[in-house]
Image 1: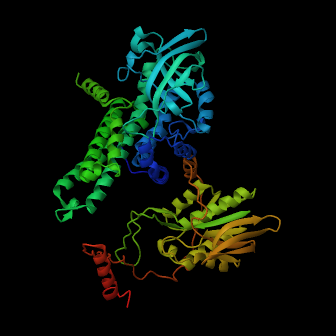
Image 2: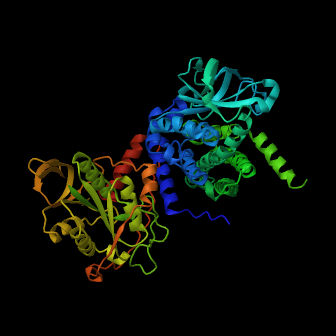
Image 3: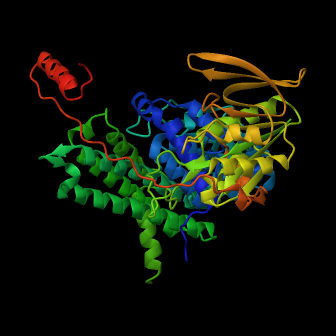
Length: 382
Length: 258
């Protein structure tokens, strides 16, 4: 039976994240959102406090947290700013393939120096014409003696403009579809690597997102992760591990929206009383509170399941998909509670809707999550 | 230098306090306790001195009940304290300043101490008595409302400032001494995640407070402040009319002016 009463250690981890989120992130969230500014000074502080490479074992220089503890931290961070949180946790996504399929030699060579200082890594899977359909990716990896030559372009990559390390998925033969995909890690300094500009986005404007071009980039075969053709499985196993914290990120956004709406409803008067005393608003708040609670519990349940050693594909898909839909619903209702004020950029809730939207799209679009959920579900009936 | 820092758990700033059913104390149920801000500044000062004086150790001491006292000790270890002593005492004893000072003095006497630091008061009852009482009980010079301690190895003396109304006093003192520090002048550091994880496993020495230490000050009655009455809104058409009405109210109702 899962027991979700937190230990004193978990409380102190959450307190650290909460303090950082409220004192370092929240005061700059609106300004970074407006300007589309990437607040590197905040990310450097996050790294310094150990809030960045959460999934990397302590002996390799990371924080060595399980998924449940990661989720506690991510929710707190996202409560202050979803975009900053995306940039802070993008390393977990980008380094997970090295943790999963890297050899001991590769882990020792790459991770301790990477984690010791402030560095960003980026997970390069999506291409201009291959998103949900991973098997359609076209970036080539051609064997050339004891090297590979990488050629192609990745797009919508979180932290790509600022990263010093890329984990890259390319194919040794596009005709092989999934079975041709192979993973590598590539330093930004490698010749032929050109990160693109930071894209203008609807939300998550404090994080950076961009394309990366790889032109005849020579990568030593010793920097290949796993076997040739093992990349598709590695990408899926990576996402199985990192999808759940996206549920936590969405829960943080949703909790922020609920808190704003509830506080506003107690102050704002209409028809001679606070709007919190009107049933129309009470129904909204009740539905929002249910969504937030369910999102958190599904996220915690998925994290608990995976921490116990289960693969967790189904539970993490349910958590990510539900929590991101919940975040959109709760942010939407928060704006409606604020009325005209909610639509104004001067108030904090419209940002939450824009930030929530991305959680339905990235790390596996919700349509893919539903496909996975249905597949896993039907297996039980077949 | 052996630096002892005495710390106190206090309810977190955003806590909604409730009075216990018998009215004689605050109800600690569900209240989150943290290091008081004054003690955070004292601990920060200790860590700065330790960093500036090679071979120094910081030993943190707190008196009170479980789990709050253990939690602030672990938080102090996560921030950089080397050793911790928990003087186990009931909540009643821990709310009696003289009893706390006696219990802390006994714990301090039992360990090496060149310098004893504490916050000048705690953010809960704000009595500000323990620092001075510790000085008396340890028979050491004591100073309150201090900022910016420097140790001068040549003379073996401490130099520091006291903030006073409209000014700064400059002082120096021989060791050992007891110094109660001002809050938030030194931007206390934040504990890092690996240090927090490590602090959970750090040893904490436990000593019991003797019951004879307590009983001098007894909580008689606690009440929450009465809810504030609503503001009076002035209705007006022109700023002149508003000012006229405001002045009349200040004179006739609030009697601020004759």
